[in-house]
Amino acid sequence: MGGGHGGRGAQRPLQELLISRHRPAGGVQGLHCKQNVMAASDHPRPIEISRHGAHDVAIRWSSGESGVYPARYLRGKCPCATCVDEVTGKRIVTESLLPILVYPKRIEPVGRYAIQIFWSDGHSTGIYTWERLFEMLPNLPGSAASQQATVQ
Ligand SMILES: [Zn+2]
Image (cartoon, rainbow, N blue to C red; front, side, top):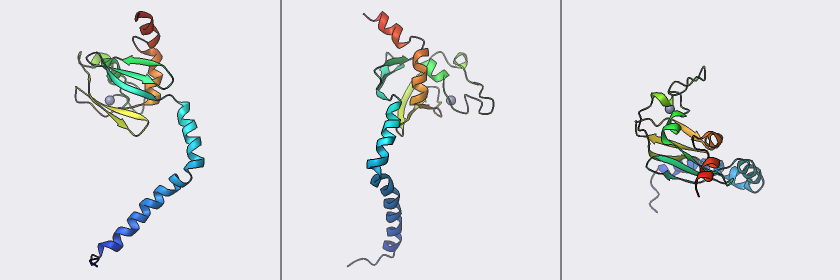
């Protein structure tokens, strides 16, 4: 038996810790998760996030709605502390201050509740939650309704 490493003993508690941290969530899942899922499904979630045109972002929601988020508009709604004064809540970086051409270079999921957008202007600290994105839906420059009306 080559178990001469003292590390074995040290490794175990960590694993147990991980397991025991994991288990309550997993074990009670049958009961608790149902409620969580119900709560989560209360809020629409994106089924599909894709690029629209050259730069814009299209999101299809679980509620059946979909919208195109113009890149610059979305960048102008960045919720991070650099773009919005945390104390006053006043927006510091508005659309008019942005480069004419600004677009997402990369979009990455954050947990199961948000996306992080890496912008062409180097900015990437903004987390766009589903809630925030969904709230924008009716106010999009070309809202889903008007788009459907123009698409034949
Ligand atoms: Zn920002």
